[in-house]
Length: 444
Image (cartoon, rainbow, N blue to C red):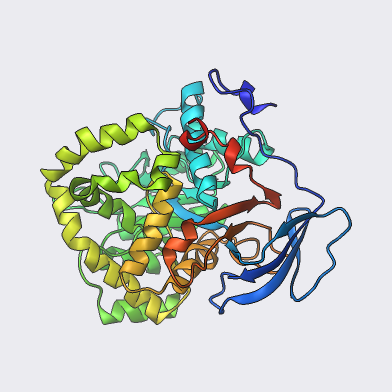
C-alpha cells in the first residue's frame, strides 16, 4: 500500500518502509559500538539483508553488488532508542474508536521526527490503544516508514490512580479488565503507581502491594513484561520486590539513599531516565529560544513553535509545577548519575515526550548531570535495548545484530552534541531517505 493512500493531504511521494537491500557496506568508519568500549578507527561494517554480517578492521572486500557508504572521517553508532514516549496524535486514551486520518498523519510525522534524529526504536508507554497499536502494525507490515514500535496501549492502575483506562481494585474479580487490555497484544504492561502528594499535586489512590504483585505475575503468565510509573524510592522498592521488570521513571521526589543504590546494584532493574519531561516546563518558561535550534525547526511545525513561544511559555512562567520541577531536576540528575556509577547497565534513555529532538535533549541532560558522553551513548543504545528485552537484537553494533545504525560527522563520545551531526540513518538494514520524511525541513 502506498503511504500517500493512508490519509488525504499527504504528498504522493510520502515514504513507506522499504525492503532490506541485499547488502550494504560502510567502509573506513570509526566505530562507537554501544558497549562502552573506546572508538575503533578504520572499521568496515557489512550488512546482509537486515543483519550485520561483519564488523572488521582494515580492508574488506564488500559483497558483489553491495551498496557502499564511504565512512572515512565519519563515526557510526547504534540507532538510538527511546524507552518512554507518548506518541503525539493519540488523544483520549480511553477511546476505542479506530484511528482517524488526522491521527495517523500526526502520529507518522512524530515517528518521522524520531527517524530524522537517528532514533530507530521507541516504546510508547501509554496511549490510546486503537491508535498506537494500529500504527505499530502498519510499521511492522511496512505500510509506513517508522522506528521499531513497541507499545503498552493504556495504563493499568487503581481507580482514581495514575493513568488508565484499565482500573483494577480486586482480584480475581477484575481479571476481565486485564484480559481486555491483553486483546491489544501489548509488548509490555505499564502500571501506574504513584500517590502524588508531591510537588503541587494532590493525593491519589494506589494499588495495594499484594494486588500489584498479582497483576505483575498475571502478565508474566501471559509472557508480558512490566514497567511501572513511580517517583519515590519507597514505591520503587515495593515494585521491585513485587517482581516488576523495569522502572518507567527515576526517583525524583528526593535524593536516593545508599541502601537503594545498593539494591539497584544487586537487582540491576532497568530504569528509564525521563529527565526531559520535567525539565521541559521550566526550559520553555525561561529559554523558549531553544526552539530555534535546527533539530527543533527541522522537525516541529512552525505554528506549534509559535504557540509554544507565545502561549505556553508565559503560562509556564506562572505555573508552580514548572518551578518545582526546575528545583528537583538537578536532584534527579544526581540520582541517575549515582546509579550509573554503581552499575553501567541500569539507566536507559527515555524522554516521556514525542519527538526525536527530545531524545537529544535527554542526552544533553544526562551529560549535564555528570555522566560522560560515552556512557550517555550506552544508555541510549545498549541499556535501552536491555530495558525492552531486545538486547540480543539491537542496541550494539555486532555481527548478528539487526542493522540499526547512525552515521555521524563527529565523535559523540567527546561531545554529546555531535550525536546531532547525522549524515545517514540505517533502519533494519535500509538507508532512510531523510529528505523524503514528512517534516517541515522537507517542505521549505
